[in-house]
Amino acid sequence: MGMPGPTEWVVILMIVLVLFGAKKLPELAKSLGQGMNEFRKARQEFDKELQQVTEVVKAPAQSVPAQPVQAVQAPQPAPAKTDGLV
Image 1 (spheres, rainbow, N blue to C red):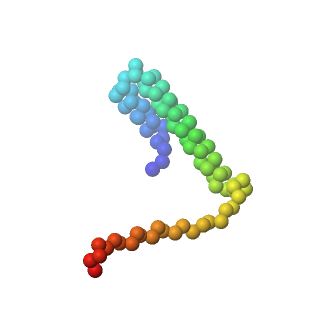
Image 2 (spheres, rainbow, N blue to C red):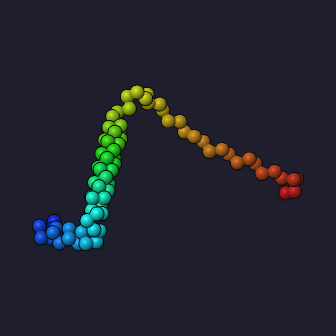
């Protein structure tokens, strides 16, 4: 399904005009434009953050010296107490 042709746009605009009226159209257009601007800004911020994360992941960790990993032993359970009853 492609973009509407000129005839379809005219029909859509007529329906919008009937539904909202001539007085509401400027408000509707303004709010639509503001929404599109907010969406564009959010997309740009997301792209910027994604690029920063990608650069951090690709950059080698030169400033952090490699340290050997030490094994961690699990604590041993305490021996069970007996009251002399065996």
